[in-house]
Image (cartoon, rainbow, N blue to C red; front, side, top):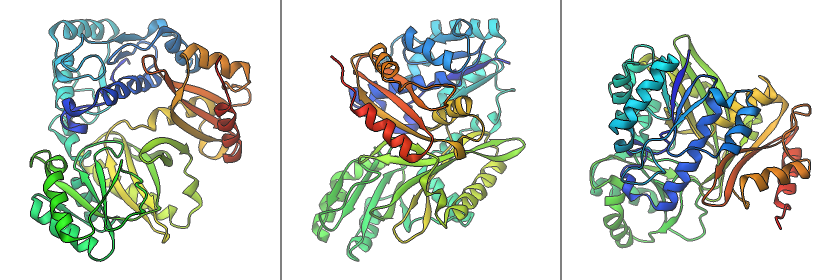
Length: 439
């Protein structure tokens, strides 16, 4: 049973206006879309912004025991934003659609699995005639994905199911936002303002009444020491927060010095099951993962997992099917609060997928995995050669080592994940990577 995988790594539903992304942000989205290649099997179709290099594709599929010659990799013609994002004009290009439809007929593909089921993907699924066998299409086909990638809807679902969440409000107008922000700041507390739909912390801003607050989960901290300064700040930033008054805005009490964690669940017709969990590494925004979550030994961890499962049971009843990630924070006071939900393929999914394959089903108890972005290298070939020369490349017998997970050909970096026997062993491997030099 073949599948059409679509690496729509950034969409308007995820980030708002694609045109507002910088060229660097779009380039990052384009090469991290390669992660979708970790999911394909023989006979599958993969739609990507631009095709990964042949050496990287062969390396990846060999690790996953897939014959690359049987995988059909398609990239639509460039669109109004170039080749780095699968914008609607690319996915709805008539020539591309004919090519994709021919591959669907040739392979007998029966379902579509995108990173996110936005409106463009639901139209594409219908045009290919694959809606009947695509799990959960009754929900996503009516715009349901909007609900599960919305920070405001998350707060409603979490509140309704009794999940522990940070103190906060969902607001629609600038005056209400300013009023609640001042309630927090005048009490000496910090606030985090969140665009309703964005990814990786890039749609968040922290507002503090004082200097010295580290921005974890947002690119920056803005200072508002008095009401006048806050009024000026909110007036200036409200169009960005609200998408020119088109979207709701979430404001929460920001707790400094928290540890970001997540659990990923699989929701099928049979029910809800845990897929994996980990901690997010931030510098100051998302820059990698450690799996399993080192906070799993925390006394509040079972409660966090239970709350996440309760939330997912409600989402299961709504009709969503697929992977879903629930983010949380471990506070200095000992609480674990749920932070947001993302009903899509996440930034950790490919790491869990490849680790399950390379290590085995007990990977969460037998190994520690770290994922990192932006390793500067001359090329993928140079990076792989250096890893092999220094006995750092993944070894199937030991079930440890480094796996390159995506290749940024134009930017001169690669992503990698390293698999160690323990946290200390994984840290040692990373230190050895950092000492590598290229002549």
